[in-house]
Image 1: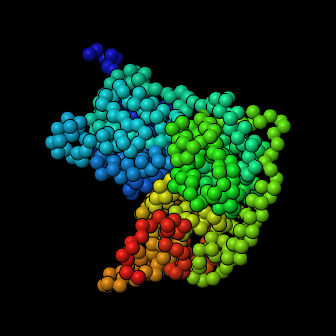
Image 2: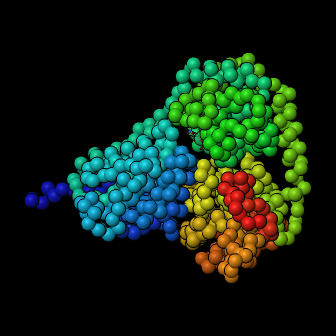
Image 3: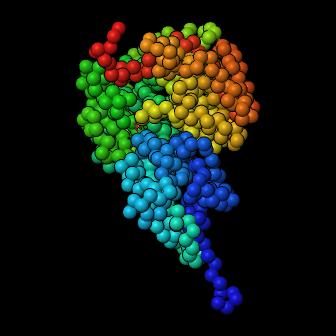
Length: 568
Ligand code: ADP
Ligand code: MG
């Protein structure tokens, strides 16, 4: 070859990185290892923020909640076989929760895997991922990387969002091609999640049903929070005059202290409403499938607003399905309501408000308790006051009693500030969610964790300290799962649901240079949390809770199967 005619080359590594950057993906969550170690290094060198975790499941949970917070796919990068499987839990979780996420895993040699000849970390990852996510793709040639990522992005964010698997075999990364041709092969995804406008007739049908109601109710779910149509939703709810009930992660979409909020009158409104409009919420177990005791005797009509047509009639008949993206649907409602819409009957609103205020008043004295050791209400009363003063704080929450009681006690004031266990009610999201929340929003994070829940992702406190993230973890430490008081009647092993008594989780944080505090009263807890949020330093507060406080499985004890033979 004559000098000057040498081809400029690119390779799989660079094409993956260029394709991510071209599509505005500037953050990747993962765990390095063969075959993606260099990909992470090179991505970091190219200006992508690469956050290295200690376990892939936590990196995956981080990516999933990044997707929820940003409406762009959160990306998790793992090694093959075991790393992939660890990440897969989070991918399935993202799909179940309707969060856009892409799990990118390196994989072993196709030729060897397909003949099952025993490669390093051999596994047919694509086949395993497929049933657990929305879509799964594999790229075998460097010139297809651009298309592969484009497909993954579209599949993740369009329609009902969800998890996508992208399989990148080790050989792909070192494949070379002409740099110009490589650049041209990349695809910048245009309008990845197009508006989905509801049909005018479905909008009219829904409003006719709503208008006919004597005791209407709006239920806002995390799909409504995801939609980022905050103003339109607020305008619609206020114009309708209908009481609203926020599902857990929709708390704060309209403030919990809004006059129409029925959060503290939940059982009354579910029982007594005659028309229920679901906006981005599914009638799954979290809403008792729309039937049974929870929903009372009176006949009910359901209106459902959702981007997924197949969601309609999933559990009960939906008399007015409205299929479209929530922003477009709610705007269409507002337009069609016109200037003369008469707000919901005021006696119903007054009934709901009275019930709510009574319940709030009943709880108030418990929240003032300064008892030591703390009970849940005393500790949560302190945290509730802090969130009221610092409404931009992102509140991450998991556990059993820690979750159920915090959801009721801690008012949220702004959209997408409460992140919790979601549709599966899983434990283990805590540290991954906290890290991504801090990274994606730049806001301070307060993670309130049951001691058991924390254990599933606890090693990531090192990650939090390493990246110096403004995260304050509060562990509600009651010495065990549900309660710390169980005893083993048959031998010397501790009971199956108890941990080491008097554990000091705060010392874990100190091991990595973070701040550790042991708090034994609500006053101490409040001081420590405020100091952490002021300083922005990674902090872990071991909040000592009475081991006898709380109940089995929190509010969902009824889901435990019972043995009729169990000796009393
Ligand atoms: P929650 O647990 O808060 O009740 P779910 O996860 O059960 O919420 O329901 C969320 C619903 O929102 C899903 O059915 C999903 O299809 C829907 N959804 C998600 N994003 C949008 C959107 N942008 N527009 C319309 N519906 C959406
Ligand atoms: Mg516990």
